[in-house]
Every structure is written in structure tokens, then in C-alpha cells.
Length: 395
Ligand SMILES: *Cc1c(COP(=O)(O)O)cnc(C)c1O
Image (tube, rainbow, N blue to C red; front, side, top):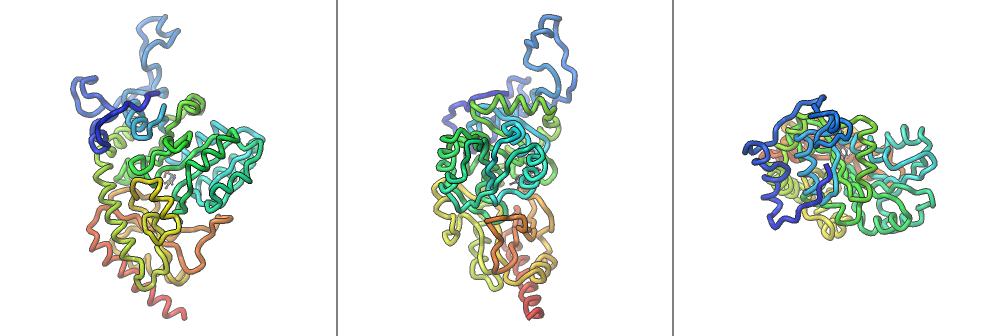
């Protein structure tokens, strides 16, 4: 559904609770109906011929998917939003929509690993020239632009290592060259960064993360400006992809509490990040909202907040990282993030070409959940003590 951002004088905390669904459009029920559908009946042959009714076939959208698309349009200040079954599909569908054989694609080197895998396999096979650029390049990206550069793909901050970029400056350069700019905006959520207001054409989300919020659903979205929306929607429909009704409903439900959850994720993660700085065994903390972080100024200038995911560099190598992970009792060892529970992974940065892994230790990524901060700190201390002991035995 295409829907302009309604100008609202209400605060985002209020809008999160009410947006997407107008109760009196459906008998006063405060939540949207969950519509399971393939067939939609037409009143007569004329409406069937013209498809002159709001809904025409299950794949093409339902009141349930419309409600979530409207909410995301408002959150992202977008012209239109598509829903897809995973965050990864929200990356691959727009890339397929805007790239042809012979085109050149610039991708930030600190992107989510499966993004790189898709570019290096499917897109290369299609004949797209894929080039990775160092997020530290900044406006130096201009030197990499070619006449056939069609798409610049950003992720800010970078996956696992949180490199920041000046998004508006990159958009200006890309647009001057006639390229489309896409950004994976999963970390910030639209509450802390609205990419389209900085010139980005397509804003991508793994709704699996904070919008879902409970580690029980997978979905993705792409929110587009007016120039790119039609091509994005046409490609989604050509590929035959949309979101399932029950999953869509769970994301709608998650949005209601996303504001309060994020406030807690933000506060707890910042408290733990500050506390980790200078802790024995920790060589540095990679969190964009810490003044010690190289991207801090860029974060402060562009973002309205920080979420619950950050990393730190643990002194020592593999054995220290393994000891840290195995000593934890609250943090779960698992991928994904944005849910209620704290998680940890040792980041694998071996696929990077320029934004390389730090040399002074292992990169440990923490997702700070909704648990008590003191309990989480005690858990991390257990891990650090085990890591220091492992380093001792290695020496
Ligand atoms: C998790 C994640 C994705 C992919 O989302 P899925 O729903 O797990 O496919 C994409 N981008 C980023 C930055 C992510 O963290």
C-alpha cells in the first residue's frame, strides 16, 4: 500500500500505540484483523476485468499487511513499504529490483555477512560487478563511482564493528552519479534514524529484530521514496513474495511496545558499555554512543539514540573467547538479536576486505536484553574472569 506519511503533531511514543490501524474501520476492534487469504471474490465481471476493488488476491496484500505497511510508512516517512518473509529477503529483493547485468554495485565492507554472500554468489552470477568499500572512506567513495554504478548499499552502523558514515554526504555523491542508495537500518530502528530524511532511497529492516522483539518471528521490510517505490513493488510481485498474516500480526503487536523496550535496551546497553571500558581483559568497547568510539561524532550528529547491540574487543585469542562464552549463564549463545533476552556471539570478520578485524583480541558482540543490568554485569564478569584465566594458561 502506498501511503504518504501523515503529518502528525503527536509524539512517536503516542503514534507507536495507534498507527497502522483505525479501529472504527473494523467494528471498533483496537487491533487489525488477521486475514488469511488466497482467493478474493469480485462482485461482477466488470470489477474482475478492471480489478477495481481494494483487494484482488492474497499475495497482493490484505488488511493485515496494509496495517503494518501503513505503520512502517509513517515510521520511515516513506511513500510505500513492502513486506517480505525475512530481513535477508528485504536486502535481496531491492538489490534484484535495481540491478541488471553489467551494472556496478558499491557495498559497504562492514555489511551483514549474508548480504555479502548474496552479492558474491547470485549477483556476480547475474553479471553485476560487486565492489566493497571501506566505511572509513567517507566522501572518498566518489573516486569509486563509475558510469555504470547503479546502487550504493550502506549499513550504518556497520555489522559487529559499528563503523559510522555520513549518510547524507554519500547520498549526494551517489545521486549525482544517478545511483540508488539503500541502507540496512535494522540497528537504529526508525525511532533512532530515519534514512529517507537524509536522502536514502530505500530503507531496509529485519523486522525479526526490535519490531518483533520476542525472538519468535521472522520478517523484513523495505520502505521506499516516491521515485523507487513502484519498481520495488513490481519486483516483489513479480517474484511472488509477501508476508504471512500471523507473522505480520506479531510484528504489528511488537511495534506497540517497541518504544518502551528500546528505551530499556538503550539504557542497559549504554550502562554496560561504559562499565566495560577499562574492565580487566577488555581492550576496547565498540559502541557508537561512547565518546571514545571513533564514529561518535557522526552518530551524535545523525542519530536520535542507540539500541542494545554493541561489541567489545576481548584480550587474547580464540581460547579466551571460548572461555568467555562458555562461562556465561544468562547470555545465550545464539544468532540474531532485538528480542527480550541477552545474547552473545564471537563475531567472524574473516570476510572483510578493508574494515578488518581488530588485531588486539576477539570481537565479542553482545545483545543486551531486558534482564536486570546488575545480573548481566555479574554474568559478564564471570566470562571475563574465565577469559583472563584462559589467557594466563596460554602464556
Ligand atoms: C539479522 C539481520 C538481518 C537479517 O534478518 P533475518 O530476518 O534474520 O533474515 C539483516 N540485516 C541485519 C543488520 C541483521 O542484523
